Length: 609
Image (cartoon, rainbow, N blue to C red):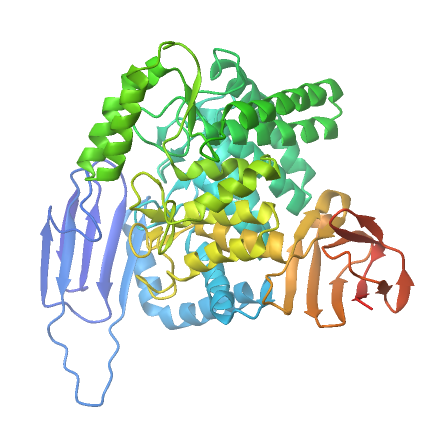
């Protein structure tokens, strides 16, 4: 790196020695001292040969009762020093105007998907999450525009992270951002792999560090379908569909050499040596087959759709029978032969020792002893390492209720859940992350255990302001990235998709509203919810008021011509009024359904007497 201190301009200028990459920083007053050093670091020490700069401002006097402002400016360019200096001058000279423009833009962000709920702290955190997603939106001309993973450690794009995070962005009005992000990840993956495999990460300079863990490809496919449901963008789905087909082929051919429908390789838990047949990969592969069949139906490939559905049914049976450990009342982390696990177990034990995880060492050593006493070393068996991903069968709702509820109950105990959320590992019982807690919340929602789900949502919200004011850290409660994109999955998705119950099919101009409120909530409202893009765009508002005698639902759409299906949970309703007129709802096992064709503004009253 080349650097210089320009005392006359009061700035530090640095550039990469081999590329036209420049950074300029300074303030609106002269500095008194400047320094550069290889070992000047911010949040953490980084690799490489970079040099950091330090500017010291000592000529600052503040009289008692007075205030002063010291504004700092940072600019960069990947083109030239002149470009970086020009940007620096612009933000220095126009920062007041730019600040007012940002405030106006933030007001617009805030006014999208406005919720009113009894829990005012959670409502505040929900609103701040909208700003977080804006902080994490990055555009690089040579790569694209999309949602990056986190600041400051991971300001680039990930396949895995975005397949979670974008589901938390769709309901808050970031529909185009979801499409742009998936296009970016898709295009890089096609250039890097070309076989349907989705990359793990790509930096802002276009470098791919990991061609993709096995789990990321089916996860991406599921996210593509959900984005299509919210946006109704047929051309987007059409762009993705060839890669979806290639990705499914890659999963069940190259990554499943023994043909048991359980793909091999690394999953979300990137633990060295844990690259076997993993639960998260299996579950998300089931999800990819399901949505893949729906895509094939859309593109009139009926035989392929039937093929995918058949594989999905077989895989679901495999997961629920072979990977379910009835004596534990939990799903296994992995399927593998004792011989294979024995070849890796010492690696797991050493990792636990290095992390000073005494309980994990004990559990793993007991596992090793058990393996040594197994006669058939070549038989596929389930293995429990107690990582949070054993929640994924419940997250997708593929676990039958008689298995799901005992598993969720155990995951909610102190064995798996700490003060700030769900442990990454029930063996280690140390680190907690917003994503492990968020997946637990979504898993509870899938079985309409809304109060249990809100427990986890509130654990995430409880870490708000712990490190950076207005934000939630990646690692709970207060370390890792100070803001992380996938936190939105644990905050927004349970609230909007399950509590408010918004489930759109924008391409067909249909919305299902399936509200499921926590027991202590008697009112909620939602305004300015954007659904659909282009000619499928619409805006939805919902309010619910529950009283002793009746429940009132007000629903409105900005544009007519859409169909609404309202799915209510209570069979005790004696009478249902739609816009003042009694209607006969469709009764089902756990509630009722009211259909409204050509919907506009409507009031539904469900009376108990």
